Structures are given as C-alpha cells and as structure tokens.
Length: 174
Image (tube, rainbow, N blue to C red):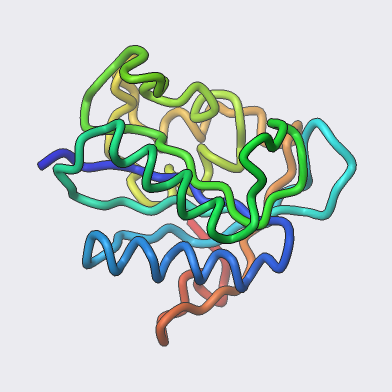
C-alpha cells in the first residue's frame, strides 16, 4: 500500500472544517499521521488566513477514486463545484503525493507542484515526514524546507486539538 500525503486547508470556519476533514479521513483510512497545524495568509486573493496541515495515510484506493472522494467531501461541506483556484475555502483537500508516482495521472499532478513553491504545503509536510523524499527531485522534505525562502511566505504554528490530541505542540514546531 502506498503512503499518500494529503494537504488540508480552510479559511472559513477553519477549526470546524479541518476537524470535519480529519474525521472523514480517519473514518475512511483508519489511523492518520497528522502534521502540526499552521496558519498562513491567503495567497492570490484578499481573504482570511488559512489553517493548513498535512495528513499521511496508507491506502490502496485507486487514484481517480481517491480524487473523486476528496472532491465529494469538499462539496458536501460547501465548496461550489465551479470554485476558482484563488478563493475562500471551507475545505480544500489536495493529493500531494501518492507513493512514488511522478507525472500527471488521471488528471492528478504527482507530486503536487505546490510542495516546492508553497510554505503552507512544504512546512507541514517537512514537520510530518522530514526524512521522506520528494518523489521527483529525491531530496528530503526537511532539506527542501531548510532551503526554502521562509521570509517570503510567513507561516506560523497554531494550537489545534483533534480527538483529544494536541496536533501542534505548545512550544511550537520543529
């Protein structure tokens, strides 16, 4: 079974929708590996800041079925089917990686390009899986984060609890 990393974001009723996503993914996949939660400003549009995190799951659901399930979950929680890329989101769930697959498969870009360009994706991924390697470039997520221009995209760890677990340590994140 491949390790799948999913990015979760919300800037409308953020805590509620992040918890909804985590509950739905746990119901579907069982035990989740969950990163700390980070707050980042909206990029590309004027809007409230996002909460972002990354979840790791092990699954054998075909890629297209997974993508369809995630879109259905987003729509069930208020995402319009015709939502534009840079707009407010109740819930946004993206497939970041699907094992070591590289390329565009069934309309899904693997690995997702935002891993290398967006702090709100790379930071939680590096916190969750620092020694895992980016499927295309082969570098660890920790090394990629260490070289990232962190001043250009501000992001901060924020307290967040789910199912009795504190996802972000009180003292911040590594």
